[in-house]
Length: 248
Length: 264
Image 1 (cartoon, one colour):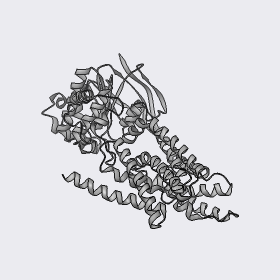
Image 2 (cartoon, rainbow over the protein chains, first blue to last red; image 1 turned 90 degrees about the horizontal axis):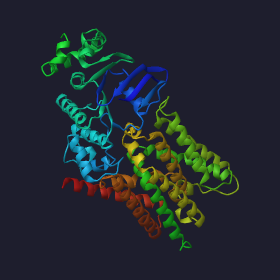
Image 3 (cartoon, rainbow over the protein chains, first blue to last red; image 1 turned 90 degrees about the vertical axis):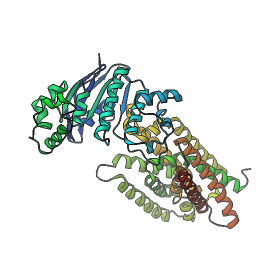
Image 4 (spheres, rainbow over the protein chains, first blue to last red; image 1 turned 180 degrees about the vertical axis):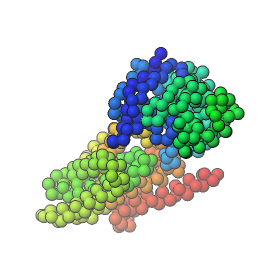
């Protein structure tokens, strides 16, 4: 079943087109990951889907009555805004304490209910955001570079948590990330974005696609190649299926 | 009870406290301190218009504050940052206002009353207008409380929850304009921002949730109004500055208490 269908989406800021003719669909229960270099329009794509950016062209069709959970990039919480985790969770839903604790446990964090949001560590913070998104019992969970600011083991753990959430609740996941290989191992479907969709498919086929290698892989684009390269080495031994497709 | 000017002053001051407590918190949370101050300064042009056109002293400032807030919201981020635009608007409106006032003939105008407030001269009619304004602000903020908080924390979360942060911003802007309009008589153009910022800043250290911060802010600003009024009566000091001085004193005391609490 298709939960969200994006057709021929274009997004412009002034005269600059950041996304061109992007079409994709999110099916129930799948983990769809969008990867792409900085400025490739990843965040604009998500913003168009959640409605904070008006598309210049194209349509976004939702399954009627769909519930969307959204996990933003690490928020810069105003230290001037006092907010306990409990109060933050109940901002959109009226909740009893038990429900809050359950949601936090599902997101993999405990004993922070009375803590101030500004006092949480990066990993705890992202999990609280995840818990908040889960409270709406979403059919699709949307994550915008949710591991920014976390170190590699921290991100890996966070994505494992996402997979766990998916298998427990059966919700679909749409996420964007530049932690390429960590994300790859957890995705069913990968879209490689650079203003338009360069290539898409299961992780293994995307990683071996020439378009992907142009962007991240084998050295045709200076810094991206460096970036991709470094990550390859870190994760070769943990994710052999990705490593095999890379000739580094 | 309303026959006594001290009672009217207290009611007017309490009104400003009630209006500025929730708004002051948002001003502090959203870093709108300069926005608040600029809106207040621009209100001088509104005062001048009211005097020139012989309208209620509340209408002109309300009108100008709304126009300025709307223009800045629309224009900011294009060529100039919003603080630059605010600076241009606020100071030119203040200057133009002062020039226009000098042309208004007839009644000799006591500028000090508008710049620093004239709380002891608040009439029963003024009180009605002040409290009507507060009722509108209170209703707006109570109605939009959750979406306002959400948009303050993160615009994307607000969008994903089905709210439009830009509309929430507009509600804050309108409330701020009303606050400025009803506060001119009480604390004056130059001190309105202090009633928005100082009590909320004082409350920050002792609050654990947004709601408790609004509550503590309300307590601080009411206390400042009552003590400031009494002090000004007995020491024969200017009233609005006395109120702000008391608020500042509470700010210092609360910060010391907050630091002590944190260290324990």
